[in-house]
Structures are given as structure tokens and as C-alpha cells.
Image (cartoon, rainbow, N blue to C red; front, top):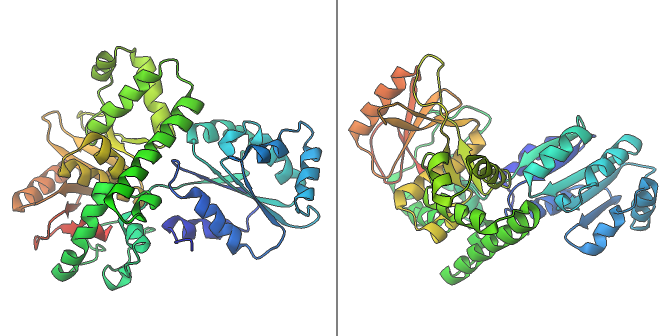
Length: 401
């Protein structure tokens, strides 16, 4: 049984539209399961599922005459005289697929559901060829709410639902009683330590979870970095990946890293861009009101999954917690950070209207500092995300996200 993800409901309003639906994300985050979910949801029998990781299936799309591709699909059971639904998994494996999809959208009543793991490829090739003919969605590892669903915890008995269409603020954060906190705390520790890749979450033993994490990383490195990236010096990007994981939650100092790895700034920037566009890392920019002259250019770095970061870099609990919170914030909109030249900073600025500080064990002074710093940049809403249970005002618990 396929377990429902938050993204499913965001996609549902578009399943009958003419545009192709493209779901991108890192390998093994659940894109194939998402495709299977919507394949099963479509009541029409005029549908087909094609996995391009199977070399035999790739041959269907190698014809330069697209009408011959149509003939092959008809042999597979697609009726082009009426509305048809074509599901294609791992489209980044065929570079000519965008023009093929465009042809069928323009000439036949076909709805495409597509997945791919390399956003740089999808965005670069799809931007022009499928302009106005696609909607792109991004799928990430499980949020903690999704983690609980996969663990078959009845979250509605524990946590009130948040509407992600509304701005997150201190007034709509649900209250978690201490008894519920105690019940969920152990689960959150597991989420921090092993992360949110679905197959890892569903493993029962620690050894199985670790084996899955190592396999996911190996798959990413072999299939994305080595095969798609095609770098001249694979040892450099390997060392870069390991170095970046150790700096989770830190500012990205290109000059310093380029010296450590003995590569040019330009080459390093290209490598980092690749890692971000294949979803292994995520960077956020500094927040600026336009009135201040504080730090504006240096981005902060986060890793795609806390389980991978923890296993390969052995981060502190505080760094892991911050990385987890950041990954959960992605569903709420634009995330930035703020830092003054003095070094004083705010962990996250969400949608330019709420300041968020991540603390394992906050006290009253943390609230006062956050309130004062937020007032300087004109933000009235503040919230401290706490790992431990606290009765302080202006605080929330991590698993309310």
C-alpha cells in the first residue's frame, strides 16, 4: 500500500489539466511511488506506465519519426483517438524526451505524468521545449508529519493539522501537551538520526537503516555524480561532498573551500550548483530589508537529509536538529537567514514576516534576543523552535511542523 505524501494533495487539482506534470527530487525520495499512486487513481483504462531505467523501454523513444513512437505506444495499448494518460519514470535518462512530449501534447489528447531526479537537466531542457505545457513539483524526503504517517502513528490524535497554505506564525502553531511530547520525543530522535528517506524509515533495525542510507548515498554518487555530472576530477567532487556535510548549517565560504580543495572558485561554484540542482544540498540566501548594510551575499548550507549528514559527518545534535527544521520549513515558502556584521544572527526568516530561532534548550534570554534583533529589521512575529519541552511563550516544538 502506497502511503500518502503531502505533495499528493497539491498535485491532485492538476491531474485533469492539459499540461504535463513533472515531479523532481533526489533519488529514492518516493517519486516512483508517487507516480504509481496517481496511475492507480486515474480511473481510465487508457493509460500506460513506462520505467526508463529499463533499457528496453528506452528504445520506444529512440525513433526520430515521432509517429513511429506513437505506433509503438499503440502496440503497448495506448488509444490516441481519446484521452490517454502516459506515466514515464526517470525521464532524465533520455535527452530527447522533452521534444517528444511536446509533440504528443500538441497533436494528441495526452496527459503526461513524469518524474526525474536531476532538476538542472529538467529545468534547462524543459524550459524552452515545454514552455506553457508543464507544471513542476518538487518532492523531498519525509517531513516529520509524513514520518509519523509512515510509522502508522495516528497524528491527528497527537498534533493538530497545520494549513500550509497559510503563513506559519506563533498564533497557528498547535499546542502539544507534555504527555504527547514525551510520547513523540523518541520518534523525533529516530527521525533526526536516520532521516526521512521512505525506505530507511520503513526499516526495522538500526543495521538495516544504516545499510539503506549507505546504499542511497552510493546510488546518488554513482548515478548522478559520476554518470550525469561527468566531472573530470571525480575525487574533487567526492571530497567536496564530504566537506559540505561536515559544514551543515554553516555559511558557504567559496574562497576558503576552493583553497582547501585546490580548485578555482569558478569550478567549485559549478560543482556546488550541480549538487544543489540534483537535490543533495540546499542553500539559502541572507535576508535583507534593503535599508541595512549587513551581510547579504554568503549563503548558508543544508543537506538533503539528516540521516545522510549524520551517518557520514557525525554532526552535533544541534546541527542535526537545525537541518531537520530547515527541511520541514521548505513546505511553507521562502526561507532565508539574517546575520549582522557583528556575527549575531537569526537562524531563519520565513516569507519575510517571521523570525525563527532553533534551540535544543531555549531560555528567556533567547526570546529577548530574538525579539530585539527582529525588531531591528522590522519583523514583529518571532518563534523559537525547541527540541526540549518548555513552557516559555513564543516557543513551539519541532514535531508541530
